[in-house]
Image 1 (tube, helix red, strand yellow):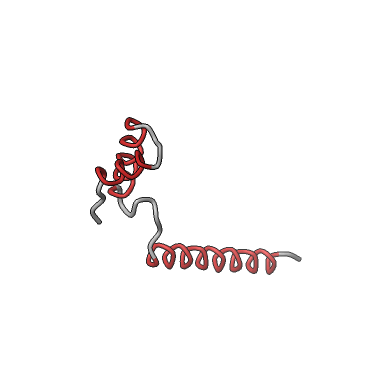
Image 2: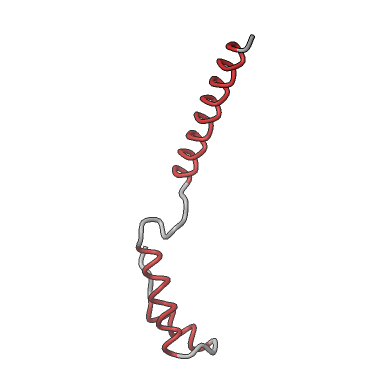
Length: 72
């Protein structure tokens, strides 16, 4: 994804933000959007996270069942 820092800074300035601040904000947005997913999770990221959580729950349930069977 291409992010246009110049147009973003211009729009921020037109909205009343000082030039230096507008440029800093635009640069920050561009840097965030260029780092991986820009901090956003994709559908695949969410699916992996859910699968890891389910596996962890199954592992905990199995450990609890094993512990219960060891009780007198």
